Structure formats: C-alpha cells, structure tokens
View 1 (cartoon, rainbow, N blue to C red):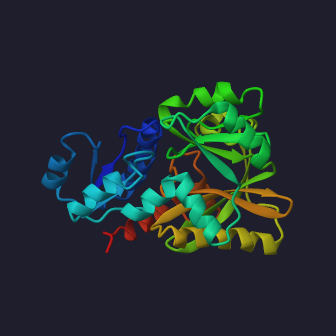
View 2 (view 1 turned 90 degrees about the vertical axis):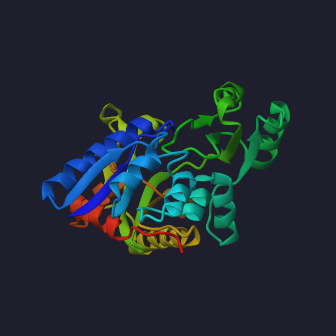
Length: 306
C-alpha cells in the first residue's frame, strides 16, 4: 500500500480552497483503498511529520504563495521525496506574472501589454495614470504579481483606478494590464499532453475568486467550446507551449481571452483547483477521464527535479 502525504491549507489567501480541494481528493482516494493517506499542513512541524510518515510521494494541494511558488517545493527537494505538480523553478516562474509574461513575449505568445506598479518604491499614482493613458488605455486590470485564484484582481476605469489600487497596498508589487474583452477560454495540459478546453461565461464582470469557487456566482461552463478546429488546435498548442516553456510537470491550466480572432494568454497555473467546481476535472470528465483517474495520473507524474 503506497503511503501518500497530502499537503493542504497553508498560509496563503487561498487556504480555504486548498482544504476544499484536499477534501475532494481524499474522498476519491479512499474509495479505491490502495493508499495510506495522511493530511497535514505546512506548519512548524511539517518536516518532522514528513520524516515520520515516510511517504512514497507527496500530493501537493497547496495554492498561492508558499504552496505553488517554489517555496514548499524546495523543502520537498531537500527531503528527497517525490511530489506532484511542478518543481521549484517552474513554480516560481509561473506564479510571477511579470516574469512569465516576459517568457511568453520572448517566445511569440500573445499576452496583454502591462506596466508594473510598486508600492515599496513609492511609485507615483498620477504618473502611473499618465503611463496608462499613453501606453495601455483604460480600462485596465490590476492584479498582484504573485497571487493565484484571481485574488485581488480588479477591472478599473480611470475614475475608480486609485481607489482599487489602494486596496492592494499589502501586495507591494502590482501588475497593471491592458483589459482585453472577449471570450474566456481555459486550456488544460496533463502529463505533457493536451487535455482540452472549456469556455466560461461568468455572470460577474470576469471569472474572479467568487466566480471560481462559489456556486451562487452561477458561472456558465461551456463544453464543448464553439471554436473552429483551427482555433481549437491553436489554443491547445499555445497552452502546451507555455507548459513546456515554464517547465511544468503534471497538470497545468492556461487562461486566455479570445478577442478579434486572437488568443491572449493571461497566465498559466501550475496547481489548478480540484474542487467540485474546478475546471480541470470538468475538462477531464468530458474526455472520459474520471476524477480518480485524473488524480492518479497526476500522482504518476510525481518526481524530484533533476
């Protein structure tokens, strides 16, 4: 019987979602009775518990900072234990929205233009508004450089820009991105292969934190997606390219806007959610891959960075 240590919870703004994900995954793994499971949080006793349990692998279900930014991955590397999802470098590249955008641009992947705002460097808001008028134009999207699950994301016009920006002061570095209208398309990659795509029609302004994790938000999930075969293949190919460029492992999900017959890559997530409302399990189901099959495929790809 394989021993699987499940990491969930943590210290990020996505702690709740991580625990919900863990509950969903544990319920599935218990059904097949071939794993000895231990759920722990990455607290001060984490390494001690890890060494005592001696798992065959760690199923990393953490989200956000410390969980998918390379931090916990570096600890698992030092303990020489196999773990799921992307490694240290990949995780740190993908969660940093500025660095990943630079990688995308360098490799001819279309991504919305942006400027960076830094509270710690006392960036001037009036000058920033002038830069936006000159280089981006309103509306723009504000987002922390290194958060996930659309935490702290705002679509702003010039009138409410300053007010929304000040809500993000605790995040220090902010990405100000040109707002791209159009359709919201998500593409998943599993074990270095194209898994499929899904389209979202949120009743809210965009697919934000509430739209992702609250049934009351009533986001419409569309699958199959109404795209030409050419565009279907194109968006899958871009997602696979991003997966490889960021050196991802296991599963990843890339978020796109489709506008004027062009796909704009917003970001690539190295540890997408696995709750009942999550997109990767839904895409997998459409491809006749059950939830347990999906989990086990991710576990089979567990590794230590070489």
